[in-house]
Length: 169
Image: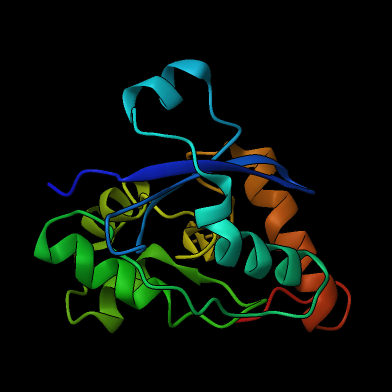
């Protein structure tokens, strides 16, 4: 497991975000509305300046100027989790897929639950857009940042990418 070299805090329209970088400057973790306990659990020096590029890209996203992130990433996980997280990065801005659709795209038509578990462990929320995955019936399902945040992120993207009321696909 890679140890974080530093962390920083970034204010966003969706609440404060904590981010951790490894020694090479790759993003290990991004967490909305971190608690003091979560910050302490990933103890490393605070260096907001080291996160300048993360903060810049998040600001561009919030301004509606960025639809995909271009940051070095180093999420820690199993090969299957890595495969799911890579697939999440392929979901276009403003679009959604179901867990089943994602499982089928990965060649595992019966793997919706496994995809859901991998999605739930995504350590780099938003940058790796796990908020774009919905239940089979189109319902909002679990999100580490909470369902209100998931709904806000989807609404934000949909308002900037598709006709009103269209959920993408």
